[in-house]
Length: 291
Image (tube, rainbow, N blue to C red; front, side):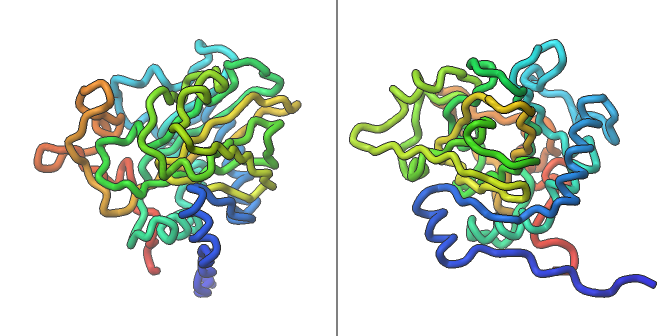
């Protein structure tokens, strides 16, 4: 006998949640991800590092060297597109609650995956090798038409500042685009001395999260993270999300070069331009079939 009961309605932000996201540029959502989904994601992470893949990397690009391999040593591990290679990680990325919540925050009719990042911060790493530099996601997404892209960060366990949880600069999504920001810059203090616009206060927030909690942040919000001083590695996934109407636009980066993202080499080409709606790389996450 098949179960014909409808899927439970996804959790959606309240009016207060929407106001907080628009004010601060980030939002904590409690209990969004079920334990079973996180248990499977932990297994998927272990499978990925063991080389047990369901599909190969979706294609070669000029920036593949940025993906962690054992040759990089014991610092922060960052691997992109892992949900396209491991089924348990795909199940996390495609969990309907993420897409539904993101659509409401972005004011979008639909949400597609942009790409994901599997992140592993080793335990006891108290130097810059374990840090994520202050940056905005938007600075890497200049070829995207949408300025309402956002990220859901999903820790696989309880997480706070001691574990190297994500730190957000509240209200920074309203700042002009900053220079001197870099995901791979380990010296957070040196960056802080230069990124704040004159006269702007800096309020850094490191949310205390329980397993199942997530954060969402706007693509222009300045964020980073410090060392993991706990006894266990920090394990998480960043799910980068795009409104369904996002598309490629011609743009230049701060150096005056044509804006580029790895997706440009992975997605299909339509009318001479990268198609950011290519379902192989960027599947529709919300609405789901039957909603």
